[in-house]
Length: 125
Image 1 (cartoon, helix red, strand yellow):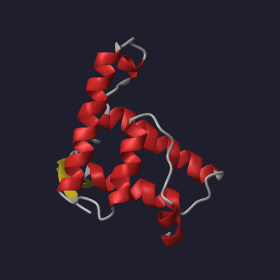
Image 2: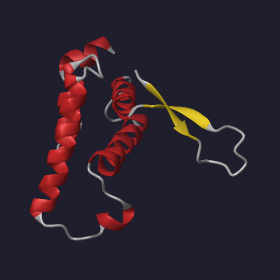
Image 3: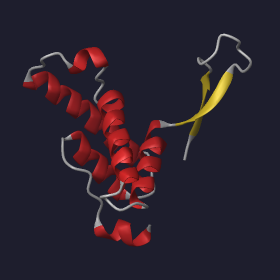
Image 4: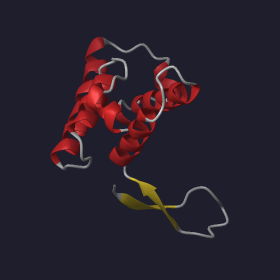
């Protein structure tokens, strides 16, 4: 997993100028791996599913609280999806996660599908 240094924006005190954060692909991988540890009907799994879905909407699809309520035409939505798919594919090309299934699962989520992990993933968790 890649860790990036970012300017600290959480305090006016500026006790620390930079903090370490996970790169976006690592955050998605972390959340998906955590989901694999829980049954799909558990509360924790549902919370993680919501976290992943909200992160996809905000980070990959670029929605904000203001733009979520706006009516978008199909072309605009398709552009968002295409850009998100390009990002996910680039992460795969750069081998930012070790398993191909992560790219497949995240691509399905971006396209509006349910979060479904391949059976072989559940066996390894």
